Length: 101
Image (cartoon, rainbow, N blue to C red):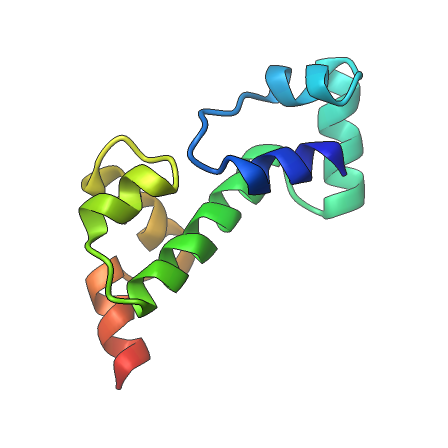
């Protein structure tokens, strides 16, 4: 729960499994195994899903992709677009157009 709370509070932070494990007072290996068992996905996959969810919300609000990328923890709009496509199957622009239709 602590790791998820931290990821939700600071999605823009470059979280590592080691940092999240330390914050949860667990070893890296036991944290990763426990997280996957409880949540159903790895900490990295969860964080990516959370970030893409936030990006979708901001796209619906009409915010520019460059600002969104920074706010949700990506180094560039193209890095966000690649992660977005992997998770949703569409680019942010394609997704936004489909969501608006």
